Image (cartoon, rainbow, N blue to C red):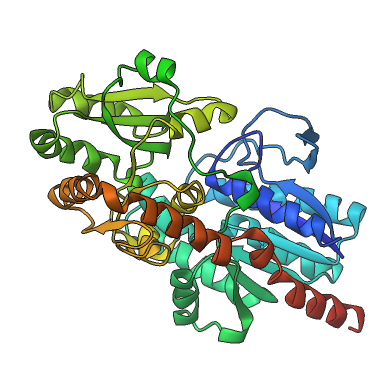
Length: 403
């Protein structure tokens, strides 16, 4: 089986998107399938027409020139991806074209699939229109939002099969009129062998960051607005009244970096919140080991209500303690009081109370750590998730062979 994956971006860029991609590719290779990989013009890391990164070979698509206006820029991206995909598909002759979000990848894949007679599957990790709302480039219900939603729905109807990452997105896809037997959930998961239960804090690193003797509430990841890190900062004054030893540790960076730093200054928390900036991937584990409670305070919006994130799964795989907002994407993963602690989304007071409650229940920590680890071992491992592709791929490839 030869699969050509069409991706928004890839390593060496680090994101939840790229980590999910690599996990899928590794498991598909273990199943004996040949995988090929094309990135869209949105992969902005400098490279040539082809690039090998950490042993993975990628075909790259150069950025189009000239079109910068909204709408025209997206049309140019689609055309550029389509031309490059046609070239690569003729070269590698795949059995399946597998387009991953956003729809800017699905449209060129569908066109090339029709031209070459190759079945096309579309994997929805999030809807483009909802991501655009969070990025501030449109608002829910706007003309652009409605047009983008219509384009997504068109791609879902035209694809031979649809994959998605969670039940929330599956239900939304069904509401668009897509038959239930045409949609398969490939849940987010973890490579359990890559995660060991949390180690001991590095006292030198802790001292360097000014965290000696502190109880650390932390977040490690990208600073997007939907992650709700502003809510974590808003919760700190109330938390500090009850727990003056608490410090917030924010590891990473992103679009909200400057706004969060300004918020810290407004709240007078400069000596209570530590920003590390982005750290090398190989060093991330050292920072996890400094954290007593991980916080995932995502705001409630369509994106977070529908989509399950990877970070809480990775935390549970390491036997970490966590608090998370009760958005739909979290409730699909976290069992309150069993594998983590859920609080009312959007409420700084509820977040502060949840952290305090978890810190007060130190005798329950071993049980919570073990339950989280068992959950990912039993239900959220990549081998089980990726095996769900097999019957769909086989059926589509067989039908194409007899067409």
